[in-house]
Length: 386
Image (cartoon, rainbow, N blue to C red):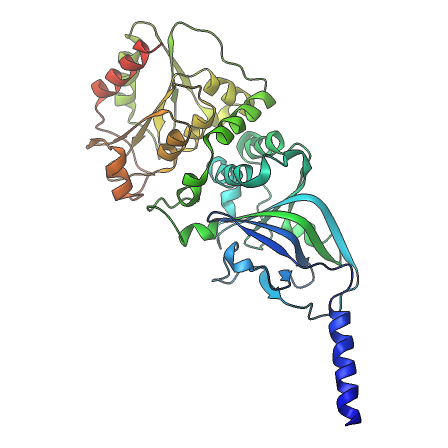
């Protein structure tokens, strides 16, 4: 039986060496859909592998593992390979994952905001000055080099919320070390998880987690970004209507747009401001939103500025025929603002109807046949509240 004793001795040595002293078990806290919190999450850059150690964590509860991606996710009770040294990442790390073939979402104002609102609410705010790294992991691919967004919007969003964070693409991060990384504290955000749980169909992450968000935290997020740009609300006796102009293919038909402008300009104590955020510095965009009483426009990224509207403001969103989206309706609800959504050829879509219908149709279509007089009546009511 000497061989058996020798085998047991070798096996015991293997288990001891499999889990070096520098390697601690992973702890996990379950967060609302799309998000996760870990202490001691590991990453193997050679094999592009995120992994946990011990029996108290499960990556599949925070990161979607049901489709091939450019990285793997593993849960190990014991370290199954020889690792003696780890590169430790101190502080809080934020890791953003995307759908397969959808890394371009990082270039989009709304979609990056979709990640950041959850990360801010589920631990980011309390630790904002301790966020040392924001890792854009995408689907594990090379990643979008233009992640900063149009007019550096996304870069400013991140810097405003997490001023000490270094921002890196996963591909850049992988090349930094041949050692495995140990993230001491991690918040993850994975868009894929939105498709596993939604109160109603939104086709957006926000539809999965918005009921778990704090109004106070969302309002503080708004103030932090506004303060980053020094944006303050100016005193005005007039009702400021800011129209977000869009062009082909998603826009309001030119003749109807002109009729709408003419009628708004005829209203007493109302000032119409026409903006094109695509050509404005993000600082100017936030300043415009902070000083808006009624934000009006066709469905699109410009309506993300609902986040910066002052208390008591109103959002009016226009959709083409047979099309509906939910994200800005939800954002207005989160901030307890008045919301009006109008579909071309149909009129106002009330909240209960919208929740039953969910998101559908193609937004990349000309918007026409809107009821201008009804829109004017909403603006008039807003004027009375000034």
